[in-house]
Length: 336
Image 1 (tube, one colour):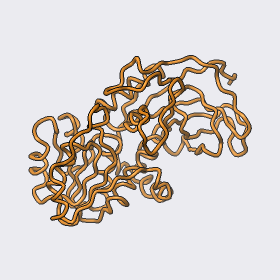
Image 2: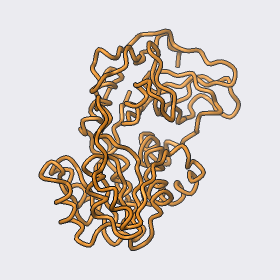
Image 3: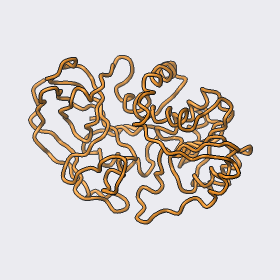
Image 4: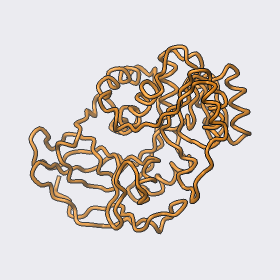
């Protein structure tokens, strides 16, 4: 195809206070990039929007550099190579990379991961077979040290990570898998399609009460995507030697004041429980093991996944805000 001359890309104009507002961002038409030595030019086909991106919009000290004001943002993307100045990648190849929020990207070949569109749909490399899936796998099996027979509770369980955590736990022999979600339809999905033993809508009553009803014998593992009242409730139901893996705390991402901590942390003394946060970037050594184990489950249909697909680069921001609101079921993807 002919080389593009223009490139639409999303810029961060100001750092959001509380909930991000449309005026904090701008869709800018810029000159299309030209690949330098060792680079490939990629036409992005699918873009990822994820809760962690909210943290990068702040300039508070964190585990990763903040987005720069007035410049294009970043995120996971998968696309087709249309020009190459690098060995090993040719036009027509498809790659996974981290220069999303734009139509075209000049990507360092050494940072691009070649993917096979015939082995699995391209969008899955951003979700169930990508960083999202590895997050679920590493957080459950390594950080939470899941063991066969454990009772597992997952918050945000209808989301991209949470739905995979619950299914992996079930496939690996959990005694009980419980999930929370934000709508009755999502609760139904968790039980009827993903095979959770129990699920509840956290909007229908106190989380502590609903979790007690769903887990009368307590829980051994809590995979936290939400924080807040979910974390406090999980500590309250933790069995002796229980483990909590903190993946995210979406309930506090847009707070302008510090959220109060759980009021029952002393229970960790009684249960000898532990809480540990983790980042998927620390666990890429599990990537090949993850693909070898989870790939066949996806191919066979034993592990099911959902995607919420939004069309068009112009709707990338709205898709991101939708993730923060919980509009998505499964992985939120933007299709270009």
